[in-house]
Length: 333
Image (cartoon, rainbow, N blue to C red; front, side):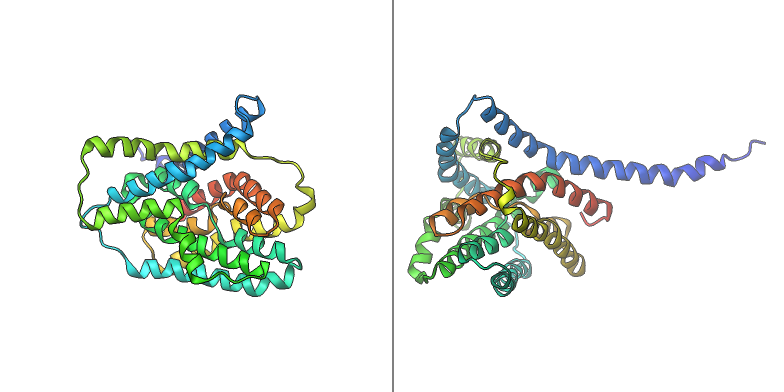
């Protein structure tokens, strides 16, 4: 009689655990590597002189004003007619963002003496690049099944980010924007206009023909890779020593402490994997690229704002990989 192979029985759980860890590693890698390649491609093309930065800055304006509105519009066109919005989840998103800004308003002025840096610091803490990072990361992990929820979350967060940024930067510049001025800035934001047009199509039940949807879809799919390419082409890693201390403090909060808090809240509230990940991305993705020109045009410390975008983008390649791997290992997504 052959004896049972106890070694095989013991190896079973070990191999299963190792296989699961490997799968989590691959999922995290697949989520981060694509946009890393786009960024590095742009960076290398600028270094080799294939493209020049003035051209990239002009192209960036076109992406922001044309390509991104197509993307926000198309995301609403893909929403199923039977989609039901979780009102409690939207309340969580809005309240979490407002609480974070409120706490920052109380703490940052005590630690940062200059008004020009106070507004930029608060903006760097709360304002995330949901468009460039949350959308491709969510699609990479969950596929097209998360597109509808992503469209809704993006439509809620992007105008909030812009409105809060205007209030914060104007406050520390010493002025107070009127409600009319705030409303104008919201309505004229290209991302919001695309979202409003898409929402109108959805609410009115308009079915666009495939001959129209196909080019809209193609332009939409170009927006994220092109924007990441431009971001990589405009990265500069010089002159960081001057602001190294404040950069470390802001990005430690932005990329480590806030994502940990978001993951803890998600676990307590038992959010679905898709809801949890989008909520997590609100706090874990790098500082929005649009925060730099806004800060510079509204009296903030433009140098610090630009460095926050640059360093957070580079550092997030590693922090996002670590967070995604950890969340998958913990079974939270």
